[in-house]
Image (cartoon, rainbow, N blue to C red; front, side, top):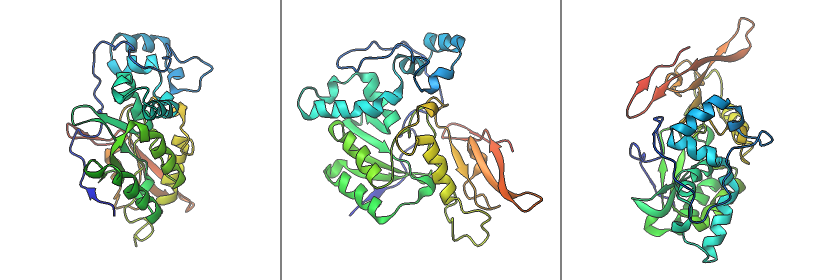
Length: 291
């Protein structure tokens, strides 16, 4: 049996688009060999940043400093190392470097809640177009059941799922379990693309011009490297949102997404998309996209 609660409260699922200034914390406690700067031989979005932008980032934004010290994509491997150390009793979650625990873990879709639920994570998944099957739902229920009252799930406004109550030692098992049922939580937080939104009535809309289900999945597979992680797309603006609309009714709300695709046939009758860009919507502000 799986029980979902409503939409997570505003501000309860990670950092917004605002940039916070402050001093970078020093690496302390248990840490996995921080990288001073990602080398040109590494595949990373950080490689595209000009030198002068690097200097500005290192002199100001707390989050840019943390990324410059070590790319968040490193957590795709290190969550397994930390999990093993906790299981073996070598460390506790409190011994993990705080920048890894509270910031970089988000590149692996894991959000620590140090005040509300210390030592436990919310995990944001990737569910393109909100399509789930019974096997996936059973996995959610079985996984969070182990956490008793701490385990629950959210259905989000972006057709997504968030699982709560996760502990450090189970992080790798969650990632592997999601992959086994065709899902992932990789690249779901911080400077990555959020869940791909499509038409909520895709495939059954009588006025549908384009079934959004497969293209949402295809775009998500490109972004996440077929659920293995794609380092080239890990350094985007925070909360980067993409959606695909299936009809003129625009149920996906392209006007409040960073990139919105609207179906349109050209003069030869070939289906394609018009593109909206620059939309924005949050609890603090809203902006209409440009077509």
